[in-house]
Amino acid sequence: MSQSNPSVAPLLVPPAETLRDQDAATIDPAAHAVAGPPVTAWALDGPDLIVYAENATFLPTLPDESFTLIYVDPPFNTGRTQKRQVMTSVRTAAGEGDRIGFQGRSYATLRGDLHSYDDAFDDYWSFLEPRLREAWRLLADDGTLYVHLDYREVHYAKVMLDAIFGRESFLNEIIWAYDYGARAKSRWPAKHDNILVYVKNPKTYHFDNAEVDREPYMAPGLVTAEKRARGKLPTDVWWHTIVSPTGKEKTGYPTQKPEGILRRIINASSREGDWVLDFFAGSGTTGAVAGALGRRFVCVDENPQSISVMSKRIPGATVLVSPDAP
Image (cartoon, rainbow, N blue to C red):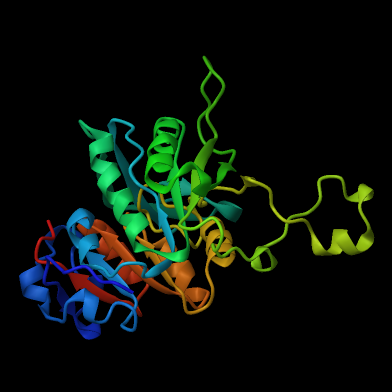
């Protein structure tokens, strides 16, 4: 396995000094990190990582063909700032809250940090293309890339990925369909995302359909009792709810993806002990699910709010702070 020469000397935050208790807006790499070995010296046998870095600079420090699975959920280029405000409710004395709940009980709503990121680029594809080329380099021979986008850019991404990976390496376009939120009245409401799936080598890629969660048959009367009990293998259209605003998964980070989507991807395209990479890690769903399934993971993001959320969500990971971190 070849290795690239690291251009960044990363800083390793000891587990006892992670950023989970830091204010996300005031992360100071120099104050909270100590010198550590270059990534190429230990990435394949080191700890699970949360990396605070600009991914275009950090990815070249990783060894070639290190990851069986890469999942990325890049900004969708909507041209607007994405925001989420964390809200919690606490019980109050009768009549003192701002809303009434079950059995007439009073609750007060507490508003927390407003997480946001800029989802607009003057030249979106010059931003994304070099990162996808790095993904090709970092995938193992049996590896798979999942690129999560929506209708705005997915057709351009398909052409770009055909050029990078080769059209023969295109495996699927997965449609994640959901039904939640506001509905347009002047056009068909958009209620799905697109996930493009490419493999490094179309002859050797790993795919384990036995590990994938099964779904109920839509016409159970047309199949045997044995098949009904087992369920059917999902198609390339996945019906799955978004992260519930009141569910235990909710972190408050914008565009957080549900664990069920990542669980299906990770089970199908990696094995226990394999390394998984997400370099637009956001709320850390990839790392949380990969760790729970016995995979190793590297989650990279340049947003300090993301690092704060991930370090709380995945307390067992080591936080790596690159000197070039914003």
